[in-house]
Image 1: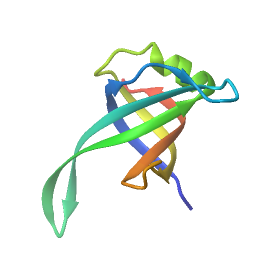
Image 2 (image 1 turned 135 degrees about the horizontal axis):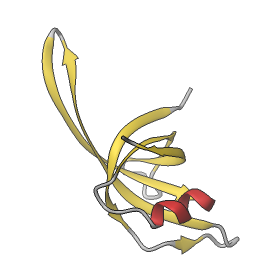
Image 3 (image 1 turned 135 degrees about the vertical axis):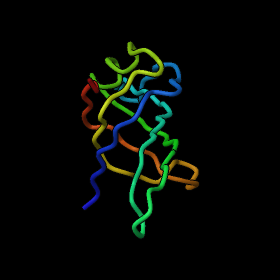
Length: 96
């Protein structure tokens, strides 16, 4: 199963674009910070993840403020150039 749920803030947003079939698409960078336990020790976790949204999610995310936190859910795919992964956003909800 390929499913990811991640609490993150929007760190960078690229201009809204459209796919060749006219579907709105938005590329962005998400930033996550948390603390996790590993081998009984607390560990600070920080990561940046490229993400893409399509359709009404893309249009809605394009209107959001940088630094705003959300819980994103979706699945991971290889990037177009094959270097790294991209979160394909299927849903998101604001963090309180």
